[in-house]
Image 1: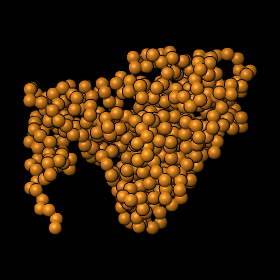
Image 2 (image 1 turned 45 degrees about the horizontal axis):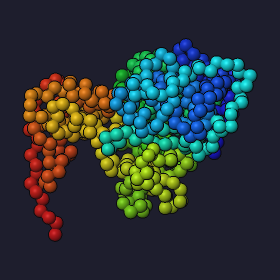
Image 3 (image 1 turned 60 degrees about the horizontal axis):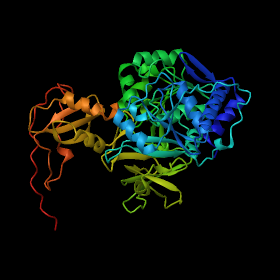
Image 4 (image 1 turned 90 degrees about the vertical axis):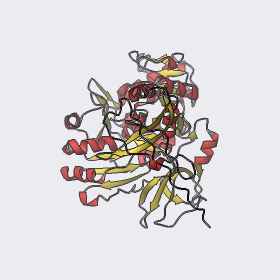
Amino acid sequence: MVTIDAAFRRWAVRTPDAVALRAPRTRLTYGELDRAATRLARALLRLGVGPGELVGVAATPSPEFVVAALAVLRAGCAYLPLDLAYPEQRLAHMRRDSGVRVVVSSPGAALPPALADCVRLDPAADTGPDDDADALPAAGAAEPGDLAYAMYTSGSTGLPKAVLVEQRNVTAFALRQDFAALGPGRSMLQSSSFSFDASVLEIWGVLLRGACLVFPPEALLSPAETAEVLARERVTDLWLSSGLFHRIAEDAPEAFAPLRTVITGGDVVSPPRVRRVLSANPGLTVAHIYGPTETTVAVCRRLLTHPDQVESPLPLGTPIPGTSLHVMDERGRPVPAGETGELWIAGETVSRGYHDRPALTAERYVTDPGTGRRAYRSGDLARKRPDGTVEFAGRADQQVKIRGFRVEPGEIEAALGEAPGVHACLVSPRVAPPGDKRVVAYVVPAAAGPLRAAEVHRFLAGRLPRHMLPSEYVALDALPLDANGKEDRRRLPEPSWGRGSLAVLDVVPAPAAPAALPERI
């Protein structure tokens, strides 16, 4: 398996004049991107970065981010996406936890105090001649097993944790995925946050196969604007979180007409909306994909080309080449077809583990008893059909995905429990009309004074990224308990969905605890 940089350079040598990155005011060919990354890599090495060191990249989705990420890899380091829209407290934790000392960021970006003590490097800092563009110090050499990036995901302990992904994980995914036929003549619209691993598909899935990555004029487009950009830029492939896919499917399914493939996943996908999109766009392929961050973007897919193929619910599908999926019982033994167990994922896309979390890494990263390969215990429940198709059967824990991002209710509860006026709380994902999953906060107010949801929301906004903020708040006089006196999430009431959810909350009584159940004989 090759490194990311080596796979990219093959195209820089083969097609140096082909457009690699296209934005409203920027066009970079493969040759130009290659030279820009080399200049920045030289500047990084002059700062004394070491092999395998994490280097922060703080930039909005733009060609500059791609130049910086490629330069970091070319210097023999690994990149850490730093979303400057994240709250200061979260960025401060990422800074302390990762130990990042160098940050690549454009001069126009305002770095928060959490990153103030980092060495800052402008992506265009080294603008010297290109006559020595291919010469890098030996310190820049990398191996397939070296770290490529760290990506923070929600953590059940209340603090986000970093997944460490190696170069060979990325190249195995990018070069072997078969749900999008990316290559010369194809283009993908950039739509995800660089702090979300769908960006790995958009960046390296494109650049390691000779295609073009297109940046829209704005980060978040309306369905009508999306349709206009896709048509004007002649985009052939698009990834969308299930929430954005649902929105366009409802408002403007014909927006996907210019595409050959639209890719969605990261959460439960609505079969009626997939049928609606396929009916409106004959010849389009909808690729339903699944994969945790720990296994590098996606490990299985279901390709749909006709409304009659769309099952309800949609299965996760079958594994991509080089990956194997196993449904296991509590003792790590395969269960028969049709029975439910935990989904284990094995193959070359399984990442290194969690940064500075040896116990958690040992718990989740295991050995596949069938092949001896490294495997990841996903925590997802699944069933396998006789033909090998895998069906999703829920989570073994409380983790959910909202708009494609992993969300641990425990992390939100840890922040919510510190909010003024909150005595106790639970957080639960709920399905709101017309079918989108949202985070709902259930709070027991402190005795003194009314609880204003807007104030609680502002408090959380200073501690959590936007995708983790509750969209509804419900005040209870007590948290519901089960017959054993434990908090019972299953009996949390349904919210009123938007009717004054950020106003002063009216406290409603908690559902009564059920009678104690007799012991089994």
